[in-house]
Length: 106
Ligand SMILES: [Zn+2]
Image (tube, rainbow, N blue to C red; front, top):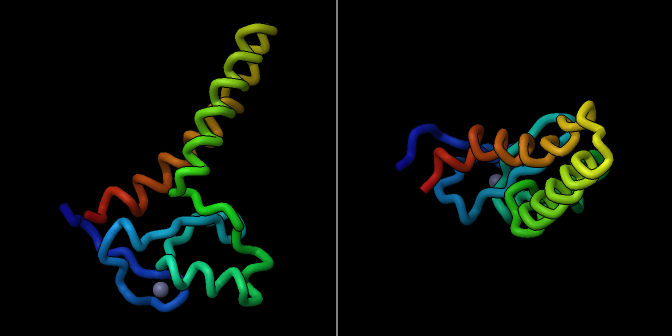
């Protein structure tokens, strides 16, 4: 169910479906791109500041799970409870991407 209009950061056209959405860091901001626009943006000058790792990708999900389990395991094993928020950094970034863009697209 579509709830909001999501526009591509490069071409300013509307992104209609989740399969054509790429979210990535541009400086410290999470931006939405069409798949093709993202690859063109990487080749352009903006590629210097655009993240090479899309947030909404299978690879990021895999790294997120592995890093969460590993960091949480280290925290529990060594008792470094002060560092618990570090384990939640990647899952939080993924959740923000989902709340900002992905949940609005079919
Ligand atoms: Zn575009």
